[in-house]
Length: 289
Image (cartoon, rainbow, N blue to C red; front, side, top):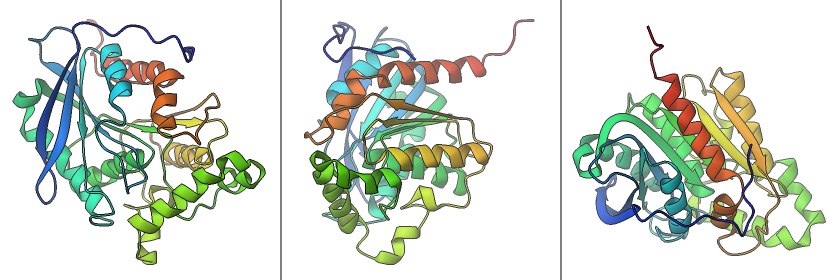
């Protein structure tokens, strides 16, 4: 694992290109943003579909824009499609997850619009978006596609019960109480029906069916109340035979607005994700004869 000092982000390439577009959700069009870097004329073999944070009740494409610029620039063989989804303030569960899966289906049908060869599809997200990414892996398996090559879960929200030790321990860290309160409020908005809180498409951590899922990279963060649920999910995936890498990033001031996006950009996440994608590419390369 290689670190990147918080104030030492490299300049972005002049070849980075960003385009706003619309994709198709479960019920209608959704805003989206396509990021590419490198040779403008080349089709990318990998497409990473990304879902933003915001606790299911807020957030938009701008939240992770800086992070995705650096992510794309560090992985020039990969196009990144950031997609919006229906917030719980408009329609609660399962609207967001149905949107997320619909975006994957749209991407598979619209490869030419994305400059993507169709070879390798990954899904990723931060916080609530990481929940949607994990659920997309379940839905794609259960619904027969689209096939995913990998899932990248960054500081994911996976436990509506807020029952992990790291969540309970925040009583000893008053500066993080606002984070826990925000998580509780987010789940109240997203899952107003208490019975939904154990549904595997709402709480992947509660799922008893985690076999036959794509390889996973899960990044937790030291002192993050979400840390234990991320790492427990990684352990469950491993126990079900899913190739899974779980790493804990350095502490970050997660009580600040947008801190998870900033942490992902300035800590270890960029390097970890680049290594994960490279590993997927190499695993598909046939041995030399």
